[in-house]
Amino acid sequence: MKTLYIILVATLKTLIYFGILMLHVAYATYAERKVIGHIQLRLGPMVVGPHGLLQPIADVVKLIFKEDIIPIKVDKAIFRIAPLISLSAALSTFAVIPVNKNWVIADINVGLLYVIGIAGIGTYGIIFSGWSSNSKYAFLGSLRSAAQMISYEVALGLSLVGVILMAESFNLTEIVNKQGEYWYGMFLFPQIIGYFVFVVAMLAETNRLPFDLPEAETELVAGYFVEYSGIRFSLFYLAEYLAMFCMSALATICFWGGWTIPPVLIKALPVLGFVPGIVWFLLKVYFHIFLFLWLRGTLPRYRYDQLMAIGWKVLIPLALFNIVITSIFKYYL
Amino acid sequence: MKLREIINKIFLIEIFKGLFLTLRMLFSKPVTIQYPFQRRKIYPGFRGRHALVRDPFTGDGKCIGCMRCTTVCPSRCIYIKREKTENKMIVTDYVIDASRCIFCAYCVEACPVCALVLTEDFEYSDYMRKNLIFNKEQLLKNWDEFASKWPHDVYFNKFWQPPGIDPSRWPKTKREQKPIPIKRFIEIKKEESDESSR
Image (cartoon, rainbow over all chains, first blue to last red; front, side, top):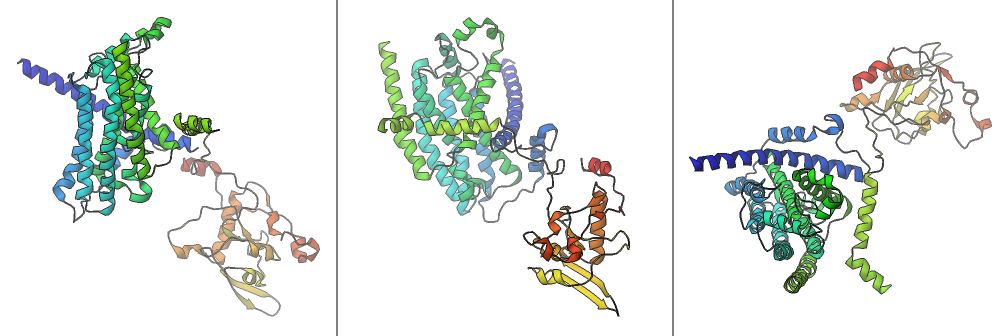
């Protein structure tokens, strides 16, 4: 009876989390079009609903009713599975991400490792889709993506080691709680190098500009999902945005203190203490999403060798340096 | 200088400059004109759909069949059919192939009687290529449509007159060209058409 109850509660939590997440993803596409439009002095979507607010819904309806084309020469089984792998990998990361005090589906002790590991599985979806599509564009896109994601996962993992050292835990809730013990309340300040490495690696990991080589529109049309259409295409799209949210949430939890705000601020302005934690969490996540869009609107795409050079020659040494510094401080202070 | 370059490289000064530029643009006013709902102001001298001016007194076109427009047309898209009676030239058909026209308005400048105009109407796209080949009837109808939308009583376009040529060398009729009184043949209510487009 008790197991049933636990399963039921977990399912309910998951469903609510899923629904809210999907809404966020839908409006992230809207926000992207709006923000980039305004950066380019355009307006973005304006016609569907007031200020184009219903545009994501129209897009969803359009994508669902589009013809699902499967080219003749593709490897059909893998072709069908690939978007599901991407999506499920992107979705399962959210199981351990706490959005508020005790608001988490699975509070496991190796949360951070789990997130990085599952995010790595998303690469399989990309490799499978590129391989099974039997198209040179898709294949090149997936090769690039595999190389990029593998080399940047190293930097991503290493940049988080500093946080782990300071928090002495892999548990995400624990990491947030630990940050509240310091007067500045965020690992952002002692871990500024780690945060920089994390942000750059996060952009590369989610295949966003300026590192969107796997889907470089000008060279590879759309990269690994050229051959996909309709609902399968939208699954890849969904996975990309979910990965963006996942990375933003991770940055928020590991560097920005999650749902807490610095104790100094609360001391200065006690009113802030009464604001629910979820508000702070969402604001920080939205800031990171905005950072993604902002960088996309500003920077041009890096060349492939530049991308690899930044990954191996700059980010990884920086991350290692950060680990050494953090360890020394941790040991002597 | 060397130190400055290193600092620029380490702290990504250039990238931050770019980010601030885009942020500034984000909060500045967009330049978009939302076309079907808002329209750009049309400036004098705009060259739009071709029309033959319908003479408000005779109700027919003013073309005298002098063939100057066909001669001057660089893309050779004007065809005139005419018949000669004892004392008068009668233009039986006047065809402009708008799909070939380059809108140089040389024909308008060359016309001695200001029979031909390029109106300010630009929304005449069509699914059929043959519908863009305007004959005389269609050209007169184009004028009616334009005239019925024109808010003033008379229409005069200073670009009818060839620029850069001394007025004394223009044809007499051209020099003495008066604004054309507008006679509205088709009643189009402006408010109604605006509401339907919204």
